Length: 156
Image 1 (cartoon, rainbow, N blue to C red):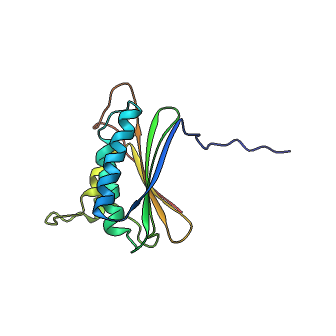
Image 2 (cartoon, rainbow, N blue to C red):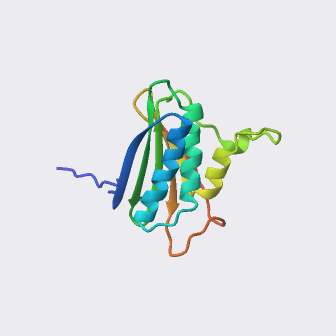
């Protein structure tokens, strides 16, 4: 029998919660993430900033009346924090923030911030009608916000 080697990383720690797709739900996402990071003894920033931006995007751009979004945090080997926000608007995928930034716009900078702060981020298309926007932070001995390489993926 031919066995496949799995590259799926089993989480060392995991947290997931559905939240209302409202401004209050976005605030609660940031507060719950802060609590969980403190409990796991992980640095708060930049993770809570990324959660705040992705939760706000889920509420503003991924909202379907009566549907919630889901916040998921996990620590996966070797030592990576994975942040995921799943909403019910799989038809509205984020676009590359570098190619669409308007210098005079008052909004639209959230994904630029995520791109700068995260080591990797992307979108995973889920069964219709949802999508998951994810970001990963490599948890080294010393937190580093700048000077790291980023990558952006849309998984279909």
